[in-house]
Image (tube, rainbow, N blue to C red; front, side, top):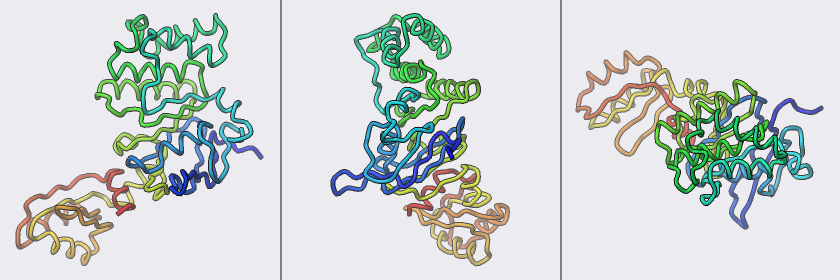
Length: 303
């Protein structure tokens, strides 16, 4: 039976000589969903995306992408795929419109279809005032948005984005995610992206946390954050160890982690924690009570 999921990968892994870049990825991505692969540089994020894009042959494992086998039906996958690399891939010597026309012809669109698709994507992403400008004259943010336009020009069913917001200012980052939200809402496109900005993935339907080529945690962001605690208490100072021990003893600590300067404790009852810290003998130089984040989840699973 064919899976309704856009991506089904089992044990997908890749070695570079004796270096194991990706251990064995099990991944199911539902059609129309937004899924993030999180982790620092070198975690295996790019390797995973390049394999799913059919640009890198797996060392082990298997996958079906949009119902097609990753190895034997790579051409069929590529026709329905949009891909954005870490670095901009548009030609700096060509104008925005020329880049998009070239991408359309590579995607197999005929002359009329290319013209219509270019006009539509330029309007959708807001590239109208820049369409005759050389790509080399664009800011980094607009180069990235032109990359998004190129990747979505042929109306793909699946969009793979590798670190899409690295180096972008808040305005262009917001515009990019707004474009992608509209693509999902209006056309049901599936989006799989990688990032090392943990906060950026909190609006995803699901996330996978990678560390040293292995998945250390996965699930819905809200569920993962609840696993840390109702809130997170950060504190530093001479009384830090005693406070942490008291939180554990009184069963107020859901999770606990030593940091370079103090403690980060996921707590069950924030009000009681604040009182305990205020009454702690020995002194606290810093105290912060905040909501749990995906960064907390990541550090807990990798330290």
